[in-house]
Amino acid sequence: MGTAKDSEQTRARIIEAAGRLFAERGFDGVSVRLIAKEAETHLSALNYHFQSKQMLFFEVLAAAAAHASISEDDKRALKRLKPREALFYLVKEALADYRKDGPENWRHALLARESHRGGEAHQNVIDRYYRPDLLFVAELIGAATGLGQDSRHVQFAVFTLISLLETFGLHSHLPDEIVPGFFVDFGKADQLSHHIVAVSLSAADPDLAKR
Picture (cartoon, rainbow, N blue to C red):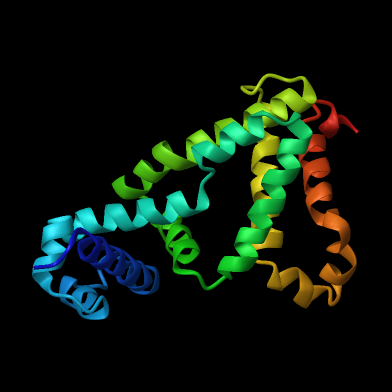
């Protein structure tokens, strides 16, 4: 008889195998038999943990989003800092996580695929992970700029920050391919993190478009 630890390890293997396959082939291009084979387990184990392919997909997508989201512990720690300092550490850690994961990580690939496809599972990710993270970053930017977090200018700044993180974190190979040596010069002494914060805060300026 397997132990609780064995059961959790099997569950984790199923999520990892399913995540890779869903990211590569999409929901409709993957069978439960293939997932079980890749996870080196049996269909009975897959059914025991997830009941259906749809439920497994929900769990896999949620796991990918949770991996990329700001944990509650991190939010509490960041709130103890000054807003601009909190934004700096948030950006710095996000860039480090992107570099550690690499652009081929199935979690990023799956989230990108599903953002285009949409659907109930992706809406669940938006409600459970994306929106709370956006509101938290909006709170920090609002506090740093003296604007309310519901300001459209603050929200624009949040999306600016996210775009910069994806450009220089998730797709960091592109800037260096287009401008060789970019990160050699721009990656010193956390310059990139400071610059992303500065640009994002500037994006919240209500008079920016009038200049």
